[in-house]
Amino acid sequence: MKKILGGKIWTAVSIVLTLLLLAGAAGITLRYYVSMNIYATPSMFLAGEYSVDGGEWKPIERDRPVTEHFHKIVFKGKIPRRLLLYFGTLTVSSKNVWYTLKTSQGAVIESYSFDEARASYEHTLTTKPLALDMPNTPGYRVKTVYNAYLAEKADVSEDAELVFEVEYPYDDALVSYHDCIDVTAYYSDAMYLRFFYDALPTVLLFSLICFFGLFFFPVASFILGRIDYKYLAFGFLSFFWGLYMIMQQTSGYLNLWIIDPTVCMMLDKVAGYCFIAALLFYFKSNMRSSGTRVAANITSSAYLGCAIAVFVLHLCHSRDLNASSMAMHIAAAVSTAVMVVLLLAEKRDNRNALLFLLSWVPLLLTIAIDLLDQFIHLPGSHYFNYGLAITMIMQIVRLIGDLRFQYKEAIRYQQMQKELYEAKVGVMVSQIRPHFIYNALTSIAMMCQIDPNTAQEATVTFADYLRGNMDSLHQTKPVPFVTELEHLKKYLYLEKMRFADLLNIEYDIQTVDFHLPLLSIQPLVENAVKHGVGMKEDGGTVTIATKETDTAYEVIITDDGVGFDPEAPKPDDGRTHVGMENTKKRLRDMCGAHVEITSVIGEGTTARVVLPKEGQRNEDNVC
Image (cartoon, rainbow, N blue to C red; front, side):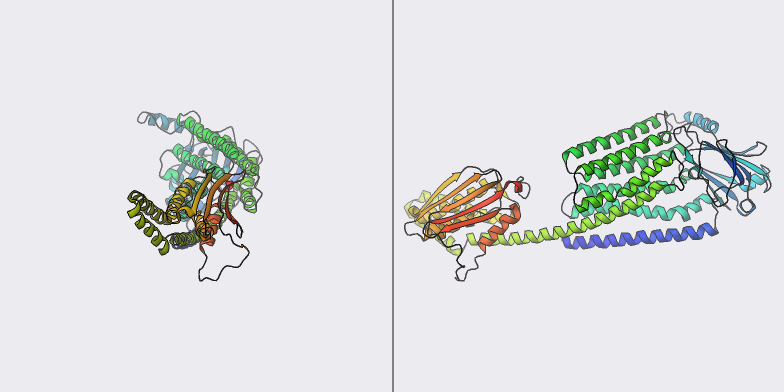
């Protein structure tokens, strides 16, 4: 069954990966084709110059985005003829900024300002006292300006000079203009079509990743026969990574469907917090020692506490989430760094652990670069997303390889269980051979005339003995020694009834606090009875003893029978002699135990079973 399910897993993985590749290829193709033919996304819709925070005026380069950090940036220039005449609209998508478009004489054409937001907020409060919008928070906004309006109502032509002012109202950090303003030119309603062609393929790609993370790794973990929190944690991490990237791709479009710009910003920030929390949880799931896990719990709890605190402040209209972005970036970076240090502190010196740590280098490096970018302007942007993508791909490849290894181990374990079952069948059959049943029933029949009460007791004991052998077929885990001892006593009771005074039984039980496979001691006792004292004319004694050492538990079966030469070849008597080998194999595979047999001809035999303490867990686990 596991083999069939495992084959289905890898088939599903292949299908999902193929879909991911097709979606990515389709997205790239559509983006290239559409951006060249249907709409335009200029880095700046004015041709002229700009000034950052009252500094010198610089020329606007047509094909180069403005990536400088600012608190207030002013553009002045003319709308290019192609944008004004060929396209019908200019759609401005803004994030966390106020802006105003006006003529050079000061006439306002379009604006999104603090005063406008406060007026809207005060109006909203009259109908929704618990509104989520905030008067001092720009949020994410989408606004369309029709070129016909510019030409007719505002008297703007291709020769008219316009002024576009953008203000970032937060003091704790700077932002790049390229990251907060995006303009799309089209001949009708541009944003929906741009979303369909430009963002939707990527959204579908990361939706598949969400599905991949939410179902594949947890289901694969369950199929392997146990709940592995490492796979569950990575499944949630993949899901929130996909969700985070979906929000990154759609954040500029959210105001098309969600009226409140503040809520749009809140959804984007919360998705980022959830991703970092899932990342910390995944780190913790890879830790083994109790000390590092406690420290990891403290670290992840501290980050969650910070996230909850800033979210509550946002809901209380005290400090919006964007104002806390810098603090949360630092908290995320520090928490991630602490987790890496904790993993290193576990003295992971094997190759797999080293690869695990190295796979996080791209993410940690890009986090450091993005933090540095807040203070020193660096070329490019969104380093974190690239580092995250590289790291997640490395994690997916590593965990799929690990799942493949675990699947092979599960198949091997299943085969071992099958062999153990066959061995137990062999042991059971060896204990209920026809001549043993015949001898036991004959003895009971004789007792019916001599001592009916004893015969009744012997019949019940014989039935319990047979039941114990049958029950062993369903027992897949070790049992307490007392269970094995009780079964031995039933067997020896029946043999004692047969041999009478020729068989003496002694017990020296010093410890019973250990586990071993069911019916693993009885073959040794049976050899002592049948081939030891049973072959001696005047009989003898079989002693069953247990003791505890510093490193192991020992079961010792001794007889003073005829003995044998351990070095002599096995007799060619037509028997397979596999019972003892099966017993040794079961003890070794299930408990890491070994059997030592010593014998002297004419003096007797000693069988010693040594069960290491490190192989003992509890009765719910395999030794």
